[in-house]
Image 1 (spheres, rainbow, N blue to C red):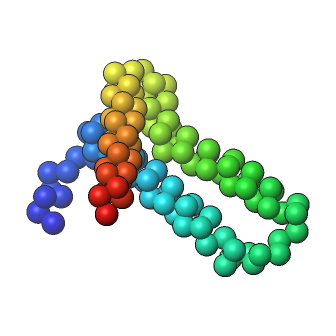
Image 2 (cartoon, one colour):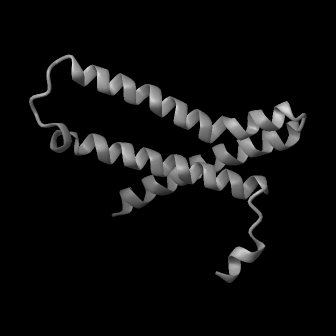
Amino acid sequence: MIFMKNLNISQPAIRGLLHAAGAILYIFAISLFLDKGEAFFGSNLPNLFGPILILSLLVVSAAIMAILFFLKPVMLLIEKQSREAVLLLAFTMGWFVFLVAALFLVVALF
């Protein structure tokens, strides 16, 4: 792990990559959960519980994504570090778009 010695997590590019990777991993976990939902809950859920579970998942997902994408930039804005906040948000969004595009490319090729 020699390359980790010079890794400075406070750099916006590195922190943005970590936030974007966390978002991708969360989306992957939720997709896996939804794909295997019948195995978890069975096929005979009462009609009321399906929409409740999906809407609850939507609310939790929105909160988690807001934390991953916006918490640190908002904290930086509160601390009057607007340049760093904008940089971090831009790097996070840029890395996220790059990772999603790379994922689509890998899936399309294989």
